[in-house]
Image 1 (cartoon, rainbow, N blue to C red):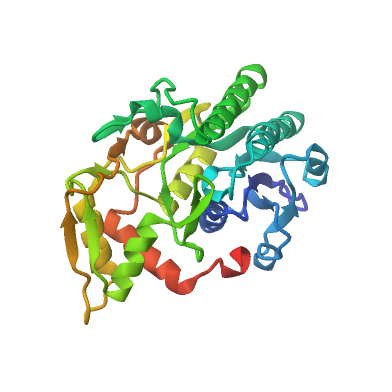
Image 2 (cartoon, helix red, strand yellow):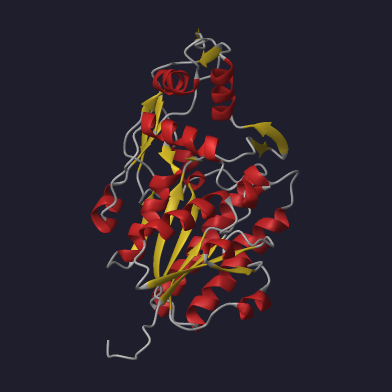
Length: 338
């Protein structure tokens, strides 16, 4: 660059930056991205100065409202990360229009924004429930499995809306060359102050937060079903690493599973929680309950993420729990999620 020239920064726009995954992703990018080449811009529905205090530009935008995109930057946009979405776990009651307005119309508005402003790539989060028909004991979930899910129940429209969004993104790839990195997500474990979610429209405490709460209090913990059934447990900072690697990958993208490629047995899960969260004075007793329902078991195949993105999980199960505990103590996003 010649003396006196202003370096043009390539912009990375993160939609859904005020959500749980969004906050951790922006935080990860802030720490890892080359700040001499890229500028992070956060976008969310909330009115907040959380990001501006950190020197990150923030725009309040509802992606379901096309006209609100007019306020966003229009030059030198390299990537769009769309983590905004309507999902059952955040929906009290049932409003099918939210799935259509946010997950379909909102994604179409985002894609048009990408097309008009010559964005190089989009990163999007999909649901693993599009493969729920393949679920079984210790099944390996492969990224290229054909869709298979039930059209019954309130959850179905959510899956349909996410599948439609993925198809829209694929169309923009084939028609306009917009690179696309689609991440299929199981539960992404992370600390947040509110330990509740919605199941069938009703508020419940997250299962793993129930266990952590009992361990902190030194209360007995029941171990339901077969303790040897295992599942892949993905920490939010490994998910954020995948997003970061997708930004730098010299690939056109595709569908990738968020995962570790390893499974942790139910026994290991509970014993780990007791080890990390129980006090020395009062350790929780683990009570086997083999007559109770089994937990789901699965492993996410992440080989194409390794090959295409250079992704390698950094957090073992115990390391995730220890970092979760640190995040709980720091509560860094309290201001954003109050």
